[in-house]
Length: 397
Image (cartoon, rainbow, N blue to C red; front, side):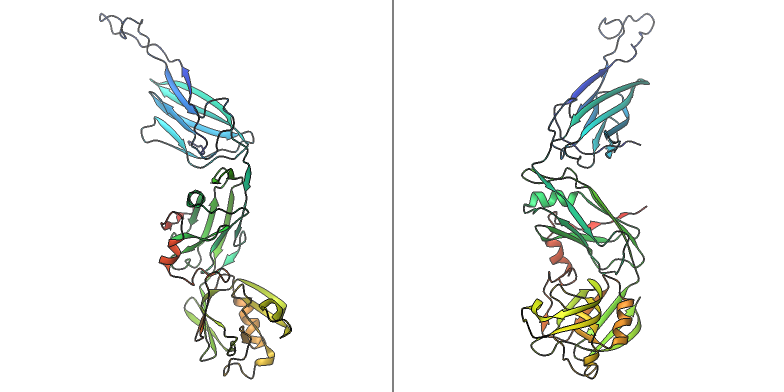
């Protein structure tokens, strides 16, 4: 299989390899203008040239054959790590697919045939050391099972503010799915770009995200230094609808209702958020402290079985002190109160990324108050892609 990976285009190294001389046909004299029947040597041209230094890693490695065909191209570093690439349909050229690692020495080995005779060429070069390094992290966790609404979050250590830099980042990202669907990347901030499907992940699907960030130029002197791979699975479709007017939460699993809970939401002035949220994290025991919401001293209450739905501190949790109001009145400070038994059941049932939709309040969920990919429309989500186009997941094999 032909393999390779993107690198800086420098002056081509043209390496001549002699092939067998052609023979003249009887009685016609020598062909080739009296050159004794010899044919011109086949040539394989490799870019970057051998010995090149400070090669920018975001330009492609290329190999070209002036005649004959290429049969194998390998681009590898000293540790044996190979870069990907593809051979042109006519077999005459090869080009790397992704960028190369910075501050790394690579050797290119190209093989081909000409009139049935083998030809070989090599080139060794070194990529530049970046002035600024871009590293990354990803969520969800490696191997995690999540709900159908969970976005992929790519978190960066340096800001990427230009459209060119953001587009380069997006081009380096692959989303592979066992059940391919359409989705898109969306820049949440200069340091975060998220992916969500157009609708929801198919239940039971497997997802792999590969960030080919090593060598990506994201700004002036700023290059990615490491690739990342994330694998996760999507669990059953859990969808919870919470109605502030009826004071009920209806929990479904795969479209079938599995539990109806009496709840109490935020009282007037402390209204809960209306909108489509996800279960962001689960904390079995914590202290709710009003100082975190800018109102120190109002309350400081231990709580159990907490499922977070916003960065600003909204949870579904156990509230034994409000069971008399659950199902009939909204008396909380903005959270969704449930009985201890219902809250424990919901905590155990819930996966991160499950959909939790609240209706019936006057306070609308703000996009960005946590991972909130479903708080805006698909068209609004797509507008914040630097490439401005949806992505259809590649099959995961």
